[in-house]
Image (tube, rainbow, N blue to C red; front, side, top):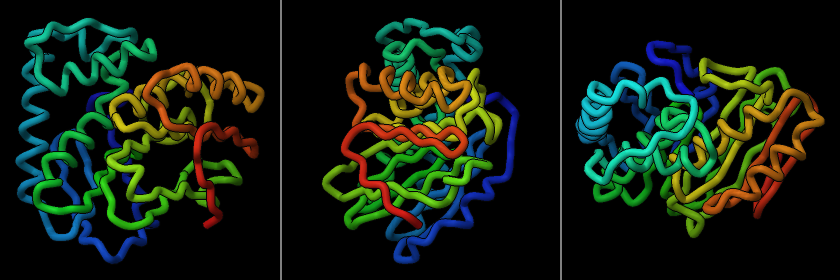
Length: 245
C-alpha cells in the first residue's frame, strides 16, 4: 500500500533497455509513471492520470475510510470504475483497497493509451501494466538480495495485457507488514496483482516463509504466477520463464 505523500526516486528506471520504444514520464502528486509506447503520448497520459485520480480523490473525499482501511471495504455499484476495481481486488486477498492503487492506475492509464499505440508499458512505483507486440524482459529489483538485478521474467505478447506487480518489505515506501525483498505477481488484472503482492509480502518474515507465501498466492483465482525473494532464497509458482540478466 502506498503511503500518501511519500516519494522516493525511482533509481531502478535506469535499467530500462527497450530502446525501440519512446519513454516518457508523467507525475501528478503521488502518481509517478514511466511509460513506454510507440510514440510520445505524454499529453494523453497526463489527461488520463488526471481523470482517474480525480475519480478516486472525489470518492475518498466522501468516503475517507477508503484511504486508510487495512481490510477490504465494500463499495456500491455507483462508485467510479477504478474504485470498484480496487475494492474487488482487495476483497479477493483480504487487504485494504489502497494496496491496489498503483496497479489500478497503471492499468487504467495503459488501457486509455492503447488506441494510440499497439504497445504500451506503464510502470508505477514498481507495478507494471503491459500490452506488447514483441518479447520483453521484466527485471526484478530486490534490494540487497544477491538475486536483485540478476534475474528477469520473460513476457511474450500473447500473455498480455498483463499486470506485473512487485511489493517489498525492505525497499521503497510501500506499507508492508513483512520482510520480503520482493514479491512479484502476474495477473491479467494489475490491480489484483498489486493487492496480491502486498498480501503475500505481509506473510514473509524470513526465507522460511516463502513456501507459505507461494501457497497463499496459489489459492487466489485470477493470478498467473509469482516469484518471492527473501535474502538469497527464491520461490516460484506458475508458468514463469526466469532468465539471467
